[in-house]
Image 1 (cartoon, rainbow, N blue to C red):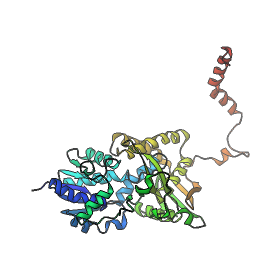
Image 2 (tube, rainbow, N blue to C red; image 1 turned 90 degrees about the vertical axis):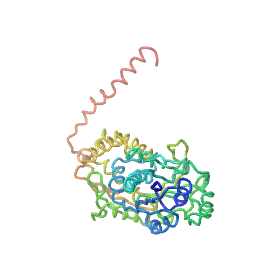
Image 3 (cartoon, rainbow, N blue to C red; image 1 turned 60 degrees about the vertical axis):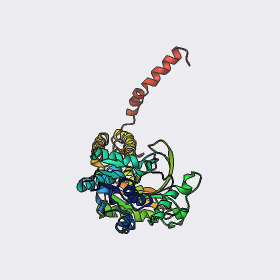
Image 4 (cartoon, helix red, strand yellow; image 1 turned 120 degrees about the vertical axis):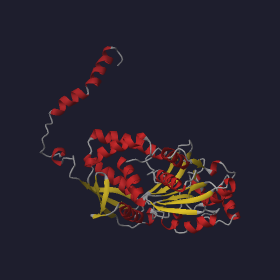
Length: 402
């Protein structure tokens, strides 16, 4: 009886040709696994396509709710954005897929799992660190590190020779990854950072120049750092993200074009469409500005950068991330309130914020009379705060250094 391998299957070019390659090369029985993270219509043809490509069966697991609640929300609460632009849409999807790979492999008695990530990218690390953390006994097969195919054009030729249809052509060979949170684009003309993305690249977001000439306002309610309602209507996690995706995308909000530092050592250029996620991150940060004290907020910014790096690098199941989650959850106890955001031609700006836990005191900060504040107290504070500078200046003068 042939050994079984579970393949993380998307129906795209790479995973489409991996099915026959695994069978031809190793004699494996290939079980395809597609994880529904909000790809939409991309999932419809997968079952028929996987079987026609040679898989013995396919699992299509709906994990959208788990994706939002257990992967997106923790990252949102942390304020984690990689290198100031990337909202980690692919990064935190991979550990969930790895978790599903392990679960199906254990259920099917498979001895190996496989993925279609290339040897140049980050996803190979994310998949494999997830598998190592959850079941280190499983063998991991990464065909792009093993076979003789060296380009997407050669991969298309391989698929064509075996009658496997693929959703790319040689004149538009973008590498894309889509889920509920984002859509990423890499490759082709984008590989030259001087090339501006063309409007027809965007499949979700309306190009800002074509967005409505009037702004759209939207309110978002948060409870302990988690968004729970849009325009006063409580929504489940998936519906909430979908609703904000629609609103933001229609107003051209959520495009990120960046040259990023990959974990494997090279720089790459990607264009990301993350409409709802952009609004949520900015709104969450605005609410934190109202509810977190200065020391906590500034230290949390350091944590956010480290958290983003951990997620980007595939260390979702690491002890450090678990510890940082505990810190983040503690900071979110009072991050409850409502934020009003203004969406206009690609811009997303705060237009009001309120919270029952606000530590902003209008009475205290006013330029007018009022508040329990004595201006004279500032004299002693400044004298003590500036004492090291004063002492050093006196020393330098005495020593003739000035």
